[in-house]
Image 1: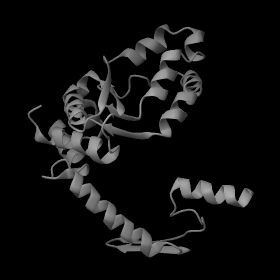
Image 2: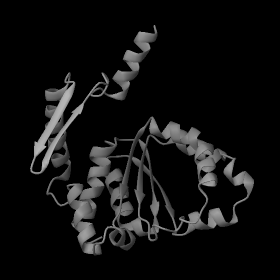
Image 3: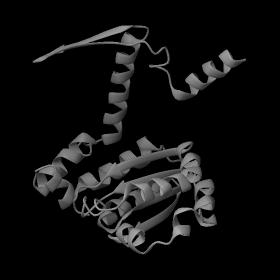
Image 4: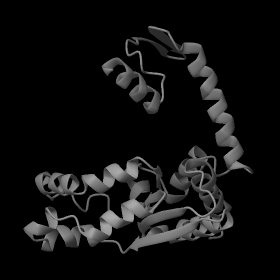
Length: 224
């Protein structure tokens, strides 16, 4: 874990993305290639006083599951998964595939069935703080027609992990975006002009610039 950008990305995930707090239980999951980032996240969670719960998986488990599965594997939601979803206060999920085409020959019907079975736990977790990120691997770099070093630079720059204070950089971006939202709130037409770009689109959704909770409150008020 010599790359300081890994530690900076961990700070972003813990202190900005989920805003972990003292005594919270935070689930951290990822494959073995993610180990450097998981260690950094684990340390950062301890620094804020949270309780990290780590789930790491060797590469290739998904392929084995789909190869040797039985029908009940796709229709049964085991109690552990329900308990995990209920007990954690937030989750940090990190993708780091070593073969992005491993499941390309797997029928989508079974994958959809598995997602439907796991939907109850997914719905529980989505109501809590969560973040999903990507850890640079050779496979991702190859798909992007880049070297690993180039892809690492792309990922870490996009996450402000190359900044001295990445959390402050994200907060500054949030304030900037809030200013843009304030400017266009209430508009019914937006035009974006730039080098080689002149794009106009119409905005008719009255809830476009509201948070989901605000949307739900207004929807329920109308029902009443």
